[in-house]
Amino acid sequence: MTGATESPEPAQRNSGSRTERAPGGELSGPTGTLLHYRRTRLRNSTPGSTRASKRTPVEDDGADVPEDTRDHWLDEVSSDEEHRRRGAMVRVMDTFAVPYLWFRRIFAFLATTPGKLVSITVILSVAIFAAGWSMSQSSSSRQSDLDVLLTTTEPMSYAAHNLYTSLSLADTIATTGFVQAGVESAGTRARYNAAIDRAMVSATESAAGLDVRDRATLQLISDIERQLPIYTGLVETARINNRMGNPVGVAYMAEASSLMREEILPAAATLFAATSSDVREQQHQLTRPQWVPLSGLFAAVFFLVVAQWLLWRMTRRRLNRGFLAATALMLVAIVWVSASNFTTWQAGTRGFAEASMPWDSLTASRIQAQQARTLETLSLVRRQSVADTTTSFEATAEAVNIALNDFEQAEGHTPLASGANRAQIVEARTALADWQAAHDRFIVAMNSGSYQEAVRLATTTTFVPGSPPTAAASYDRLDGALSRLIADARSSMRAFINDGLTATQLVSTAVLLLSVLAILAVWIGVRPRLQEYL
Image (tube, rainbow, N blue to C red):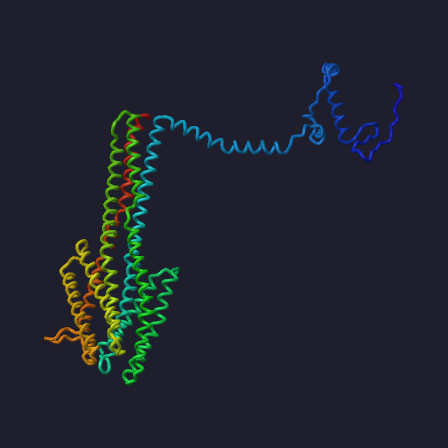
């Protein structure tokens, strides 16, 4: 009915829905609020617009609807993966947009003639500095290593040499003193003590220069230092028994000499050979030409030549003073480094090799002579046949002659050639000949039973006018001459190492300075060409 008034109905609630019907028939909740908002908007519109709205349905996109009343469940749903992908691309574009713009501008500039000039100059500067820095560091490292060789490695090898020779000399002196009539002389005892002391000090010096990781060499020194007190104890026991007239003293002396020759001296020989090999290897490594750094300097000169050609193609000017000055500076650096390398190679490879050859052979022959002298004296102590000592003596004489020949051969190429050295060689050869003759007389005396004559030949060191030299006196002269020749050979080796060290001085600083000056010359040379485009 049209005029009837509708009675208000009680509010209807639905427990499963959020829509409520309030008194008066209106809906409450989000849906009711939306309907109320739309009705209010229609009432407030103009009549013309009302009629138009009757003709055309109003399309409401919900833009003016409050956020909490929109129908979000009707919106199109987009995937989270698409949002993430779209966000990652945006971040990438935001991150690299400015660098990309910079690169475009840089590449656009490099395509121009000024850009090409700047590119060539930068490449040349980097190449020249890299070559100079590499050569400077290589020369500095070589100079430092040569200094270590001169102050640490070579002295350690010389300490091993002293250890080797001192131990052998101590055994020879102890054996000779044992056969002297009565109590050994004070001079013999002092020489023996000095040899033992020098051996102990040399062992300590050898260990001081070693790396803690070199277990094998350290073990050799430990064995020598552990067995040396045993040897000296056996020698003292033999001396005490000899003074008391006990024949057992001979057995103690023979046991001491056997310990020295069979265990201690082989360890010392191995130590000396290892340290000498280290010196030769380091010297060889440090005197080779620096091919890699030199190739960098040559490459820098090549780049300078190519750059001048490119500059001529771009500017139609044949020569550039700055580039020519840089090329000249790099050529000076190459000549300087080449001269230093040649001097170092000549001093290290040729001179050092020729000086080290007599050093090794003289040391080995001196040790062999000392052992032959010990065997000669032990045959007298034991009063046994000297047939075995004859073979050993002949081998020793041959080794000494070879060592002296090596020294003479090295004289023609090294600073070893001097009047004093030649006199020492003549002295050594004469002493060796006298020892051979005295040894023959010693064998005859032993075989004929002339024990007193054999003792005199084996122990008397004084020279009696009108009589031939004894074996003891001849050996002392030979040992002294060999010792002086060894010292001269060592001085020559150190001189060659020092020459190599001197040749490397100032190379590092000079090459780096020349490289920096070359870079400045390049920039000064290219500056007028760049100003033409400004």
